[in-house]
Image (cartoon, rainbow, N blue to C red; front, side):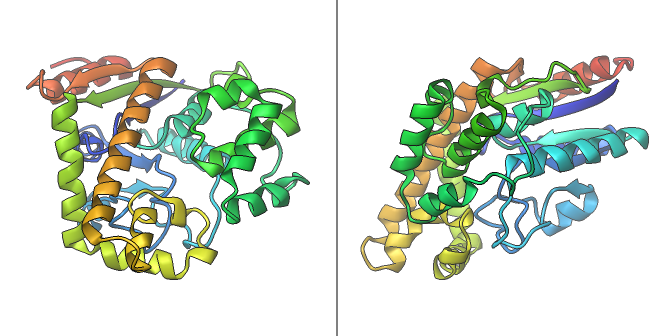
Length: 307
């Protein structure tokens, strides 16, 4: 069976750095599980690896779409499965790095996500609600049609709401229960975590570094083109700066909002992976040899020998 390693955990914990190191040592290639890194010209706010890093290790599902294109979990699932299958055939280790719990769950569990992304007669209705900022109406629809998903998915993410509604309407089953029972690949999930104060400081430092790298210019591009960028305009790191561009808030307060939302997102990520998936967790502060331990356990998973 195809073997896949996935590196998960809260934002800013060091997943990308670990993925690069493992890819080099274990003859692997990286598949981004991030829903925003697929977009060209959105580099800083999405925390992409540097151009040099993207060259040193082959990356997949990075810079493959223009920012005005819609990208769904179904797109990710389909493309990632094809890439993983092709890499495995070449005796390369597929390393899925980062992303949301739902994206990874769709891949691991081979979720039935309904028909083609554009064949649902209700899609336009839902997209119009999203574009007009009526997320409360999307939430109400989901609560009425799929109470189970309403309790489990991120209710502030309009794309997740739309997909959950579509899946229920097209399959008659909750998106949280979708699993066709066919295991198509064997996954080993490496989870990175850290003590909360240290993690939060890492998040704050990352935001400050993003500003130094030019986050404001990138966010201004998103703001100026927000009517044509339905996904980017809702991304953490961009949307919080809109009040600054409109002269309604100070830069300092907007940056604090980015840090706060990033911390909340990190907490949600950790909670999801801890409760919904079988993850082998490594605390990067408690275990000074965590990278050695991870590599050893991956080799065991792959059937190799531990040196």
